[in-house]
Image 1 (tube, helix red, strand yellow):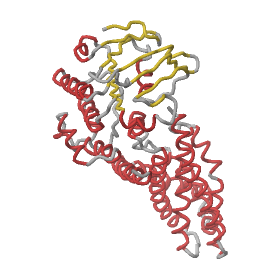
Image 2: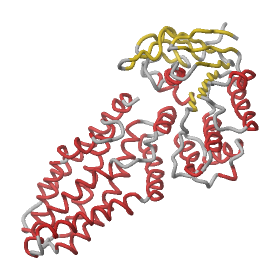
Image 3: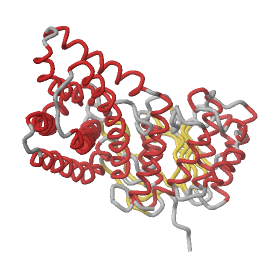
Image 4: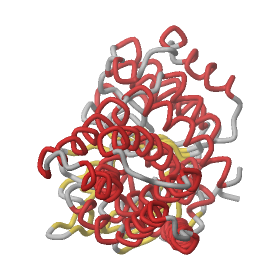
Length: 217
Length: 219
């Protein structure tokens, strides 16, 4: 019996006053699959990620994310199984990296030790006591990946995952993508750098003007 | 995890964030005190007049600067962090409760700090000071909840939030001013305490019941 897709959306459109951000977008992500999403600035990549994260309600079209129909209350049940790493880090500037992770661990019903372990896994155990506001972009990005490790998501959505990371940290992105796909989860990875993410993805899609123009491998 | 437990975690971290920024203690209380200092300069050093208008001026300053306290940048106002909380399954009502509770505690601190300045500058005659232990938290809670709801309606505040808070805070301001006037005249203030409590209950219900809708509409 075929496995249920992680993401199966069809004919998604997102309208904003005076603009059609996404039009007729259909996408399927299968268990264990990593999909790369490419496109110029303003092509609708981030909006599509937010739709898949159930944070933006599509104006039309539909489908399921982790089995929950978009636009219904059922998405609330699956949200804790989704992790989104957006452009801006989801960190409170005046809290330390350790405190930020502890807060998220407590809210996720995890143990405080798990937060420390996640920071250690991304090479930030020494910076646990440093406030997010005074950390470099790369450190904040690593802390975001620690958040992903803590969440152990079934659907990982990465928006420009490599931004701010040094080449050595590229392995970290690969490890996280592989850990999600290895568990049978799905990954959608938005990037401008096809070469850098090429080895991480199973297939790629290109968005232009809110429409998928180039499905490919 | 219960809504209250989520709210308690968020509140703890919000207060820690506030202690580090020190915005209310280092900025809002001093400026509120200056506002109280300016009024005697305008009306002159007429001690009887100052003693009678002192409590009214105090509540006006609490309202105006209270809006600043409730519309400050909070630990959970970063949009990415807000998204992360949504994906963690944090109940919008928990976020409302935590933000309002943090604002209420800071407002209470503001009320006490500026209240001491008002006593020194205006020397008001107020009997039954013990009642203030009830009036101050009720006003702080009401303004905090109102400000939090207005911040959600206007998606983060901006210029519109104070315009929403000011007229809607009239029952709170009226209850507070009438309660302190009652204390000054030695008349009963129970009904004004009940007005304040009733407003707080209505705002708490409104905040909790609209939290989800307001959060959805802000995305």
